[in-house]
Image 1: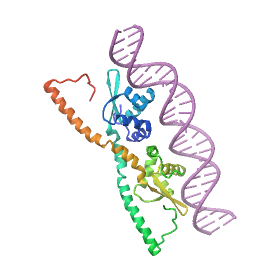
Image 2: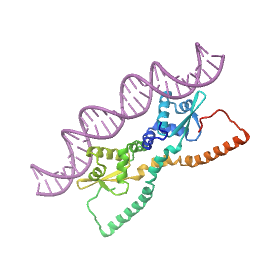
Image 3: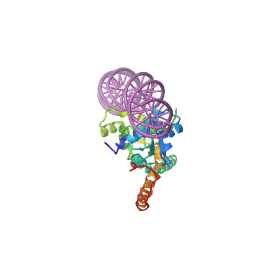
Image 4: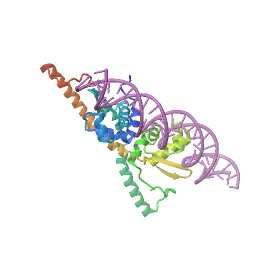
Length: 124
Length: 124
DNA sequence: TTAATATATTCCTGTTTAGGAATATGTCAA
DNA sequence: TTGACATATTCCTAAACAGGAATATATTAA
């Protein structure tokens, strides 16, 4: 049932700092048993299991049984919705630099020719 | 008081779908009065104001007073923590392709030379 | 001044959620 | 079987949170 998760859930999933910690542990691409994650995170076992469950539901990690262990592995593709979404704004902060430059230039102009386009004293 | 927000808050801020909608409205870089956002989002005014407040606290939007309006504008730099964080995993899903290829090749080898590295039937 | 408009804030309520404690489930070893 | 180990799940509680309703604040117009 439902092998691919709702992309919206991914944003919720990574909103939790501890879950980003879990992801950080898995970020080397290796697989880890819950035990090992517990040790690395200094966190109680049920909490870790729950976070792993949330990440799995969101499609951010996968799990395979190996003996009595459950090996978790990062599924980075699950993070793609976030990547794609935030990538849209890349151009904004490069473009922002242009805007800052423009503003500085305009201010210089204002000092020179006393240009005033309305009351906006708190703009900076 | 605290002009730059805790980067961790940004993840929480964008976890809310409605707040990503607000960001979507502002994503053209233009400034919008709350009124206009309300219309575009078909959402009650207090809710919009609250979401804008959350986004402002997270450093994702800025606001300037203009007459009786409050003009909100996207501050894309506030999204950089998310961008930087998720960018780390770019290599994973390109690298994943390599892994898939390697696995396919290994399977071909297994068929040829009967290689077996342990019981792991559910790996795919 | 009063009225209208724009926005924020407060209060309330239902829902979600994180984490602790206890318990259940599943797997291996003897 | 029994026991040890690994992990998940259930139950509980406190905190966070979203949204609605009502209200407060601020600005403009008359």
